[in-house]
Length: 289
Image (tube, rainbow, N blue to C red):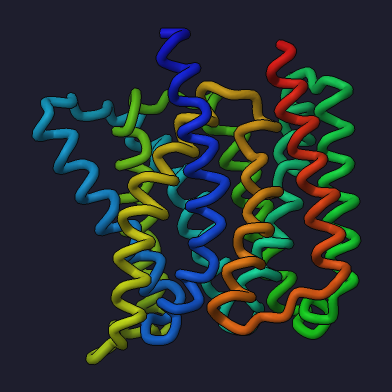
C-alpha cells in the first residue's frame, strides 16, 4: 500500500499542477460558446458519468446513502460553487489572473485544518507564507485591479474550495475513483438547474474550439486531474494536496501568454518565482515526515 502511494503521489501531483494549470485557458476557450454554469454542469455530468460507467463495468460497488450525501455536499462546494464561480469570473478576468487568485486557497485550507485540530509544521507555514508573498507581488498587476467583481467571485470560489478540501478527509466517502465520480455527478446535476435559473441555455451551434476545450476539460481536467486531487486529499497532507494552487498560475500565465495574447508583467514573473519557492518548502516539509 505504501509502495503504491509512493508511485501515485508524483503522478497525482503532476496532474493537479500541470493539467489543472492548463484548464484555466481551456475554460476561456469553452466560454466562447458555453455559458458558465452550462459549461460547468455539462463538464462534470459527462466526466462523472463516464467514470461511473467504467467503474461499474469493473464491478465497483455502489456507495451507501450516507456516502452519496457526503459526496453531494463536496460536489456542491467544490464544483458547483468553486468551479462554477470560476467560470463566471473568467468571463471578465484573464485566465492567468484567475489562477493567481486561486493561489490563496492553501492558506484558507491550512487555516481551517488548524481550527479542526491538524498540526501544521513550521516549514509548511514558511512555504505558505512565501506563496502568499508571491501572490501579493502578482496582485500589483493591473489586470486584477480592473475587475473587482471578478476578484470577489474568485474569493468566494476559493473559500468554497477550501471548506470542501478540509471536509473531504473527515467524511465517509466512497473508496478510490468512485468518490470522484459521484462528486462530479453531483456537481453537474446541481449546476445545470443553476444554469436554468440564471437564464443560461445550451448553445445551438457551438464553435469548434469551444467543443474541443469542453472535451479537454471532461477528460483531462476532470476524469484525470480531479480524480488525482481527490486521491491527494485522502493520502497527502493538506498543504501538499492544495499546492497545485501555487503552481497553476505559472502554467496558466504561460499558456495565456502563448495562446491568448495575455500580458505577463514583471510583477507576475517575480511573484511566480516566489510562489515556486514556497511549493518547494511545502514539498520538503512533507518529505521529511
